[in-house]
Each structure stands twice: as structure tokens, then as C-alpha cells.
Length: 229
Length: 229
DNA sequence: CCGTACGTTCGGCGGCCACCGAACCGTTTC
DNA sequence: GAAACGGTTCGGTGGCCGCCGAACGTACGG
Image 1 (cartoon, protein in one colour):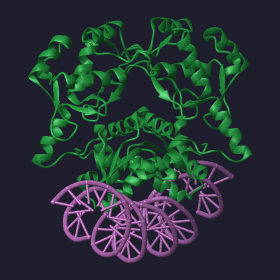
Image 2: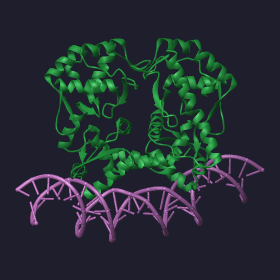
Image 3: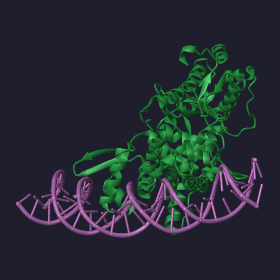
Image 4: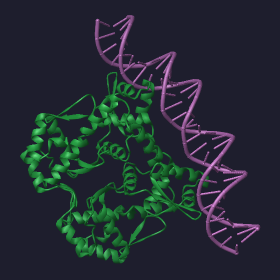
């Protein structure tokens, strides 16, 4: 009522187009894409993509970096990523048709990155296991316990100490429709998991697959049953 | 990438219109409005409002209840309220012009309800005070402490014990741009504050004003300085 | 320096959609 | 039963916007 209405509508309007929505979803992989890549992905002419990108940049949803004849673009910041995530979670995904798409979506449901943390069944399983082991409290709120802090220390995953934002927050998943671990601690965990080869990225997308080593380590350190993944 | 794109765009499209956005913001007061009230508030013909409402209902953002010749409508559930809140927080509010609007927005900034909990400077002040007193942890996450649970007990504010969702979560405020307390516990707190006359609703809007009694009690139980409000 | 590749600008087209007023329907009131 | 009221449906209209292809500007590479 203070003039938020028009601003809210303008923000929503940026995402109200299928092409722009697809661009933002693609950018959830936290990488910087070129305008041409996005055009091809969305199946529109380069000129059309250019216009869409300009709107998203003007609306502060995207950040651009010109480099030579390329225009690299990525999500403006974590807040934007959270916004896209949140809105996606409010959506019942349309049923998929076609074998190829089915394969891809099954892989995404199994495990993927959600901007900077792990999501899908993998993300949920890790979160549930941490709850069960008393590393994470979800009754009085959503926070790491003392044991949880120790767990990170034992695994030698450093946590930002001088961070103003809470170490963890919850993020609702659009495939599982369950809360899973997000926030700075989850981002560090995700990096460690990928760096140590517990999981690897597959395809050019956000999908990840747990390696045999990962299955073993996740079982050992969290009690995650391989069957859950 | 699984067909979320079009769904996301459709959801955003519902909020991408100024009139529909204004309706949703008005409904953040958790009350049920009639179609005519919304039409008048938004300054459109009743026929236009009717069409907008039908779209919002079809999109599951609103719930309707026909009663006699009236069509009462309200936000579908807590999740929708959270979505509207979240998106509003991503918006830089437009500068307000005009004395009347300025008064109204100043009142909203001072204190208001945000669906089911307190927001504005009042909500932020309470949250900060709870942090300072060790009732709420915000470093390892966002959760009530044991002392926090006791505090609710001492004040005889009952908390849902068999709730699956965390008792508290954080909610970003669009006037203060600060996190404040939300979730079931915050909802009960808000109800208690209003029932006990610590604050009263003013106008027909979501704005609330702290009473002298409330200033006293908030100082006594939380150490909130009256000057902060 | 010329060909190629990436991106932008522009004109034009087509479709969608918010809006209104008028006619209509069901409910409430007198 | 008539009048008033809340809400809906239906044409019609105007404007906005996503899309494309063509032309242009600009970087890279031989």
C-alpha cells in the first residue's frame, strides 16, 4: 500500500514470460552464460534473447559483464537465486513427456545443485540424516547444533566465522516438496562434496550424481543408506 | 528444465498485473474481502475485479467462499502469504508522495501485521531484543533457544507442540530490510500481543500501534526501549 | 584486410489482455 | 412484488509486448 503494488507487479512481470523464466532457471546453475547460449536454449532468435536479457538486467535480476564480443550474464546475487527458488517451489511441475526429457528430469530429481547448495533427493537425504543424527534442529527453528558444528570441523569443512547471515536456512525443493539445507554452511558442504569427488556434475546442467566413494562416505559420516539415493 | 519454466511464468503472470498485485497485498491482512471491496480499493470496475479474482482463484492463490450474494476471498494458505511477502521484500519501495499516503506508510513502517505475525519496526525490535536476551539464535541458523521456550511459557503463550513445521522462521521485511520473527510461534505471539492490548490495529489496514501498556510490557519482558518504537 | 561470429537496433506484425459499460442473474430489503 | 445491491458475462477497444528478419556495429582470426 505504499507503492509496493506497482513495483511488485513489475518484478513479477519480469518472470511472467516463458522465455525469461527459462533463462532465470538455467542461470540457477550459478554459471555465467552468454546471450547466444541462452537464445539457443530457449529457442528464440538472438535478437529476442538480447531484448529479454536487457530487461532482466535493467530489473536488477541479472548482472552482465561484457568481455570482447561476448555478453556474459548471471544471476545478480544470492537473493535473486533465492527468489527464483522460492517461486519455483510454489509450482506443481508439469508432467514430462518424452524419453529424453524424462531421463533428464529423473536425473535432476535424484540430485542437483540449487544455486550454491545441494537439492533433489540427495539434498533432502543429507538434511534428514543430519536431523536424525542431531546435527540439525528443526523443531524450534532451523539451525545447526553444537554437534553439527563439530561435524563440520571433523570433516575439515571450514565455515565462515565472520558471517552476519545465519549459517543455515531451509530451502523448499520443487521436486521433493521437502525442506533441505541451504545457506553458507550448505554452500561450503556442496563445494566440499564436489571437490572431494563424493559427487560429480553430469551433463551440462545442474544435475549431479553421487559416486561410489560418495555413497561410502555419506554412509559413514551421516548414516545415509545408499538405497535412499 | 522439467517444464517448470512455463509454470513459473504462469505463476508470475498472476502477480504481474498492478491490480492483481494490489489485491494480493491487501489480502496480506489475513482477512476475507468481498469482490466489491477489492474493486473499490484498486479503483477498477466491479466487472474487472471479478475477472481478476477468478484468475487468482483458478491459479490457487486465492480461496473463495460464496455466501449469499457475496463472494468472500482470501489468500489460499500460509505458503501463498509467504510467497507474496518474499517477493515484496525484493522490491525497493517507490518513494511516496502526498501527505495522506505519507502518514499511512509511516504508520505501516512503524508496526503492522505481516499475515499472521508482527512486522515493521515493531517486529524487528522484538526480534532484536529476543536475540540480545538469548531467546533466539541467529548465528548457526534461526531458532528459539531453551530460554526462548521458557520465555513463552512464562508469558503463558502456548506453542503448538505437535507441529511439523519449525516453530520459528525468518521473514525479510520490505520497509526495514531486516529479518524478523515469523512462523507458528510468531503467530501466537502476535495474537497474544493484540489480545492483551499491548498493541491495537489502527485504520482498516494492517497497521498496528503499540499501546502505553505494550510499551511497558515490552520493556519489562524484552528490554525493548520505548524510543526504538 | 576480409570473412566470420556475437550482439544490438529497428520496423513491423500478430496476439494477448486489462479495461469498461451494458445487460443479466441471484439475493436481500422494504 | 418492486427496488436495491453484489456479482458475473459478454462485446468491443486500445495498448502493450513477444517475436522475427534485416541491417548494422564490433570484436576476433587468418
